[in-house]
Image (cartoon, rainbow, N blue to C red; front, side, top):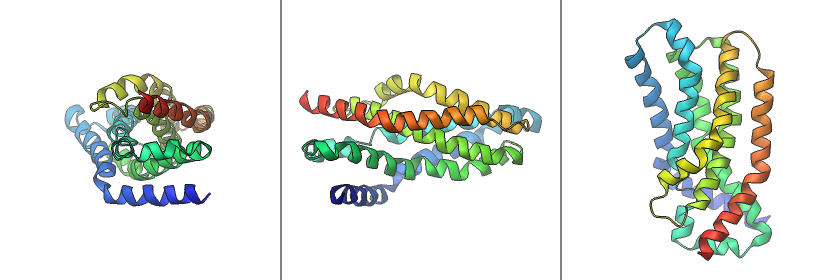
Length: 222
């Protein structure tokens, strides 16, 4: 437990020192949503119709911007090798690293999403579902992205390869997240979509660290 608490404290401090890594996804999210009305026009009916898909695609792409650095620094300064010497704690360490990454890159997207939804004329009734679906979805995106980051950590330019690896796994989250927001905008509570997003998050919480551990071990052995 002391090791896990020390890891959380270290990751939290590193995240604050490298705050630009967390700002980039948020800035990208803001810019994409701000540019959409310039390309499609200001018709509120049209903007409301495309808002769920645009918000979710922008959130998905924004989550890819910072995932490459999830294990990069630990690999470069050999901290990763020290983590692998603690097999009993490695699962918890991976989970903590992903948690801190989500707190700095995923949670801000959730918090600013109502404002951006208003910019796209999304009905106010859909805002709670938008935030809840993004919260569940971005957790899954961070966990899935960690798999790609672990598999490419030994590569100097693994950003494009990460996208190739994780984008197919992102698609179900994108489909159900956008569908949940669209149904909420139409006045229907999307219980089924939210349940699937929750199941995806729980499944990723349990399985993703195991795959990440295997990927990190393979990267160091090679």
